[in-house]
Image 1 (cartoon, one colour):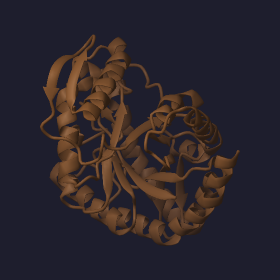
Image 2 (cartoon, rainbow, N blue to C red):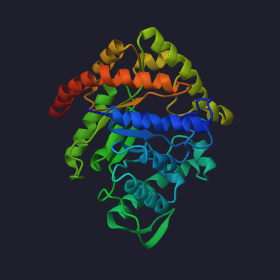
Image 3 (cartoon, helix red, strand yellow):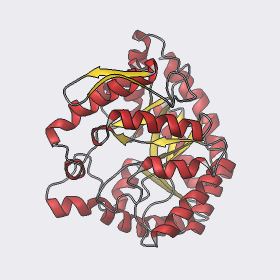
Image 4 (cartoon, one colour):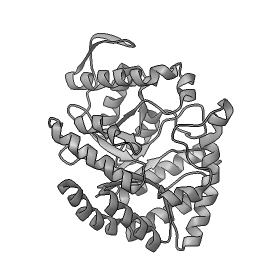
Length: 348
């Protein structure tokens, strides 16, 4: 089993310069602790993210680490000129000596895309066209494409990624098994935010579709769960930290929707207890978190766990303590649980 981190980098209320330094120092800790990959989101015009340019932040992160892999989850493709993004991917992979991971998506908020001049009805077709341009361009070394939104004629790439033909792909999804069809057929890794039982259905569909697809060079695809995790010495301490921080995070999450009206398709609950009830968040002492996550891994068959350790106003000291407890007292048990559970999923 591999372990990763997902970071919204929503505003903590502390100075941005301080928050950046905290996150970069935590990236070094993730590396020291044996995490495989650091993922971050992209958002615009909202305190849900203090890092609206993933490439800029990840360039800094690449210089603070030497082994930790990293990437966006996801780049919001409709908001980019595909050629420009191809070049940034090449730069990031070279800056990190081949550690970049490429997460691609269309975006969830029409308000954010509207700020970038993208109409809601264009988000999906622009995403599909941009992804086609990026993957074909990276594979060929030349961008040659005549589409509805972008047109290029024989543009040669001066900066190619170290990873050939391109960095590993990642796609984030909910609980619909059909959402795993494209990733499976293109060798992408997947992250699922659904509860453990529907996540197993997603992973099984992924494997079924993968069996029909040509080899894309990803011999061991990662099929992961994403969970909000707070570990402390006692259940009461962890629960208090999580509830306090969630209030800040939720205000950041919902602010743009309240300004414009409406609700997001994948609405998070205002009451953190609902996150606990469905298993999207797991908090408590090492014993409590270990038992609950072991159960989720055994049910889902996941071979990757992406953890959100920092959200809202969680302090650097609280985060460091939570990560240390997770690393030392939970990761070994999950590795063992995943070995048998994932083997059973593959054999199903």
